[in-house]
Image (cartoon, rainbow, N blue to C red; front, side):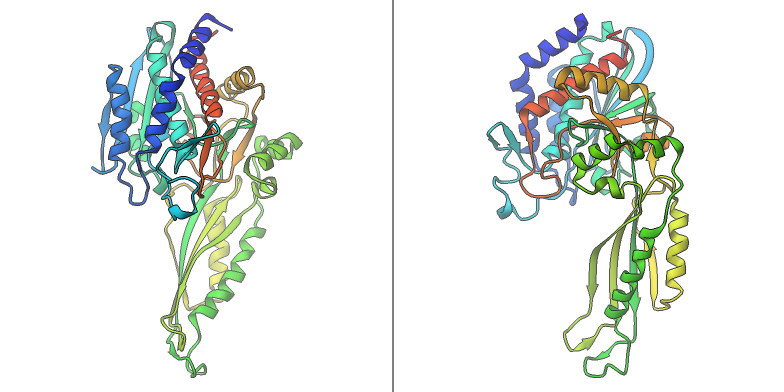
Length: 422
């Protein structure tokens, strides 16, 4: 282990109570999206930077959802690494279903509980600490390090990372991105499927519930439509060779199932369909004249949005009562990915093996992260974070030992990428 790595690990160990406190207070600061007001959460992170004399700025295209950016140059020229994490989190839902209040930041048996601790206040906290620690050692590094703590990720990122790419590229258009979204110690992620969110509206004349001969039921048409839309899951992609080799690996398939639940390996290369919302009818004894169906489709690598729409429009020829509107948060036409064998991925693997004793397997993921903005810009972006325990459900939690290990991996990997540990 190099001298710099030894020093950094000593600094992480010496400050571990501070790092845990920073994460705990972050969790105790509610930032649910919707409604998306992240000002208090951003102020918490900005105060950490200010207390250490670190220059930073707030960029707020929406005044209630600021983005924090910071950047420093090392003493030698080199590559530009971007650290990325988000401030906003899912809503907490019914607090009565939680073991601890979702905004308590309670610590029990070495685990910190609260909404957003895994997704992704743990990872964002790792990013800001990594930035602060490496700033102190910039004389030993080469290149440039940027920090981006953004809002609006949970609703698409248009006013967060997407806004930075459009209006402030100097902070984000680097050579690589390191993101701390949930992954687990068993994998590092190099790509993700594309979401396609659609709203189908069915309209009929409607009538009295006893006069079923007078009108079709919008709800029954919706039922038939939903059954037909299952045809989308039979579409088969043409996988790029690198991805085909990866998905065929027994090790990768095992890692997919371990990370995202048994069966994940079977659907990572397939179209999936989730009927998220069904709304129809006004009263029990009225034939529904309108029904609304909201559907979440996930498109795999090697298949485009236009190909999926081609099948959807073919189905809709049998349903003249139906219109469809895209409400997807994406403008992309296909899933995003970067090199499954890239340099930063290898650095993360080596570092994680040294820190945690496990070399994470490179995999793609089923969900969506801000890493896609970099990949779609041709910039490699890799995701390594804590386990997704309770993510988007009640009793979300992170083991504090795991949090500190992820922090160690982020700090040492960033330092290695910036030439601090040859």
